[in-house]
Image 1 (cartoon, one colour):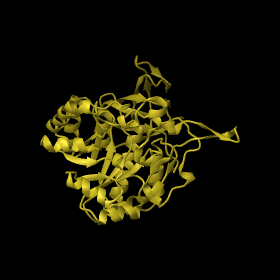
Image 2 (cartoon, one colour; image 1 turned 45 degrees about the horizontal axis):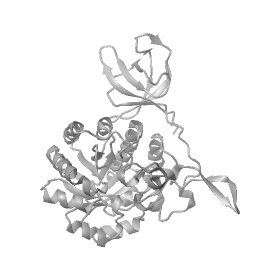
Image 3 (tube, helix red, strand yellow; image 1 turned 90 degrees about the vertical axis):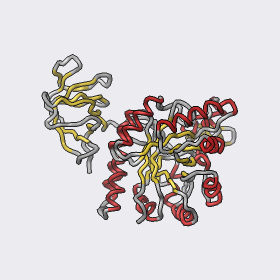
Image 4 (cartoon, one colour; image 1 turned 180 degrees about the vertical axis):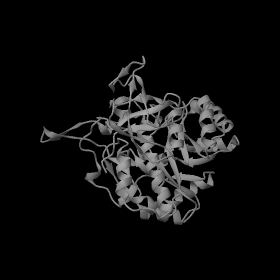
Length: 396
């Protein structure tokens, strides 16, 4: 096999960056307050970027900055300032769509790498060779390629190739959608997509509205079954989508793919269903293999859309006091005394836990932690760590 494949994870804020790093990412991608296509996520101030880069680099994890908008003439001066600040912070690469931004990064002498965004819809070697000539070191392929097509690209280029393996999909070709701008004046290519593909649409037939509603959206991508093939054909980086997703999503998805990748290299794979069940704990929507299975059809679309959150995620450890064995937990769903739950960790196997005592924010002992606006103290039977997750047991 070639150099071990990179696992690249999304982080919408500083806490999520730390979650991704701890749970096994080789690299994380984040966005600043400007020039990023996820304006609805919290994104990073310059001070947060500095802290995030220091945290990641101290744990041998790289940091890439999404700088993938298409700028106007009025953006030029601010882009120069932004690129120079990123270079000073020491980020490892920027993910970029605009040739102008690529050119300016080179002219300004920035040391970070240039990774071409999937927004460029790169799907063949001629386009990849073009980006190599202008100084890029990696291309994020269009999501509409099959594994044989990806392999053909890799055989004919020396560039690093990055491929999406998990997360939300766009119904338009590599995200080139104008519906949001048309319907709501929110420009998807400026980071403000209103996701009209997830709206209900009426279907008219002979001037009558049919009973069934129609959605344009795709199911989420899930590639557990295809990771070995992507490793074997020489993909450089496997990318998870989701800078706006929850810490529970990130922890479960990142750790599961981390373990899957490591197990493939060590020849330990027995049953892929175990990895699929762990991924499903992230609470994402229905999933599809999309083009990685070789084709797409109507079964890859969403026909019913629900925002009902997964109830298995109970909370995350914020602090632990060894003297009292009390953990401060950010609650998401109720926990009762003597209920058997699981501790999902970034550096040890999942363990069964029975909570002995629960205290509310006023240190009054209660039977149940059930207010998601409160931070409760839970008596733990063993030492726990910040960023470990409490969840209901998985039925395996």
